[in-house]
Length: 216
Image (cartoon, rainbow, N blue to C red):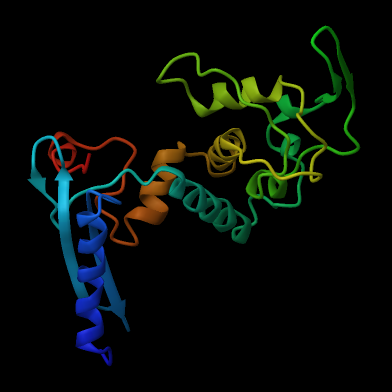
């Protein structure tokens, strides 16, 4: 591979040091070059309570790494001419038409005004939309339901004027993927991204066998 074997051994040593000092319970590290895996090692525990050692095939909750995967799906659809990140969200999701913007809020009053422009897909991608969150009505609600709920909330700030970490924005992008592709969001990711890349263990719903391998 052209990599220094001695340097590679330092990777697991450093990870083990993090385990020993309590920074992490365990980790899996992989180093690849020119399409070849040259190092794959596991250290520490996958389950502290059960004293289960970490293995290279343990699964991890990827949390907000879902966001760049969602962005990839959106840009794939842009490449195919099915949407454009500069477009207003309301072009694809009419429920976002006529949104209001919070102008001033006090303990007793709330004043609203129309924003200078509607939110765009770019705003959603860059966490600058101003979308507010809503309580999830139930664990199995659809992206369509969530997007509808977000659209009825007043914007927290003018689109493009501020950065604020936004799960509602990413969920709305997931709904946009559904509308533009004609597929469920999870199906699009599975068929267009995960399977082609050989990501056989990447899923929203782990099987019972996969669940046994999830690091806790």
